[in-house]
Image (tube, rainbow, N blue to C red):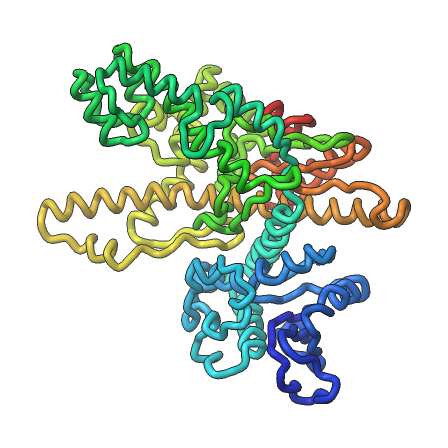
Length: 577
């Protein structure tokens, strides 16, 4: 059952309601819908303050799929009120998938609907929930927001039904919407973070916390050494321009200040410069200012952006949630009596490629937990490094260097797998769109790209060929990375479902709130972290593995390729790698 939830302003009583009993001020409308998106009963208008209790009752009685414009507009306030929901359909996230998907290319929806701007999808402000302009299409202009939202949802359902692969698309939309719920829940729960341990790390690496905007003690010491070695007493090492001028004056010919380039140079200034760069990154990205801004109450609560990358991978806004450096992972620490269960899908993208291409020989190599070792044994004389380099080169389009030289051997050994990514690359070079396993398609080429392909001079032809090859490298990787994101989304959604069932079963025995429950607290591409009481660790391990197996079946059916997950149980995230 679907329940549409939309903001309204009930200063005037809705049609068909008693004006004396209608709530006044900011309200929410709830309308039951059928599988066609049609209303099956009159709308119910509630004061916002009454919404948590109503949602809880409806969850217990009907287990609906909530339909709303944006998860981040509705779900965080419900979570703050102690209310969680089982399922939803995020209209904004689903809209852009359907507009761009090659599976809906022949539907009226794809041909008449404009995509939402990325800022519109991300806008978390409550006011945004009341803007008709989000669905400003010809069919929706002029109607109240709730009517426009219902019509948009009905159109999305119709687009899925008329698509080339309705089952796959429906699964993708459900997984994407579940991801939106998980992102909000993980921000609400937060990643356990020991501020005292973080302070210890910073003090050890940088020295005592400085006053105001001063440099930490160890940074200032290295800056002083650098000034001496470069004979530049007024040098500010944080200024790239000043640093480059000082290096050149000292006779150090370097084009950049990147660490890998500096490491090739012999000069007394290089060691303190490299040390300065390393700990200055820690200070700037995860120093005391970061700790003050992003950690409170023993939790790190970043904002995750579901589908923030065109391939379907997540991104984050602020806090660097997807780039927690090894230096500070020791601060991510389980609460007393709990453990962090960290699971990552082993060599996910190469396994996805084997499944997509139906390459039986690569499937044989993938039966072992170390796919690269299996490939090395089959075609690279047991040299795992060469096997890994060749396969990743095929996925990412490396045509030069060692990876390029190994492509011929990889092609002879795995013609189906290499042929699959090569076909995706050629399609991209022709300006075509490629699609993930469940139906997320890459963006079409821009008008400038298309115009650039219509070259007339030799120089224009050279540029056109370069841009075509660049797009080919993008589409080559998109089909694999996008399908891996599909798999990870299903894995995450299935794990959430199983953890909720576990909590429900335990509540039936011990009572609601009687004990701490296992919770998802972190997700990064192919890695999941669960914070769980020690007595639930073995159960959660099993659920993680079973969820990965379910994700594989959902995407590929019964196939002879394993998608194993590496699971570690630790107190500190630093010990998981």
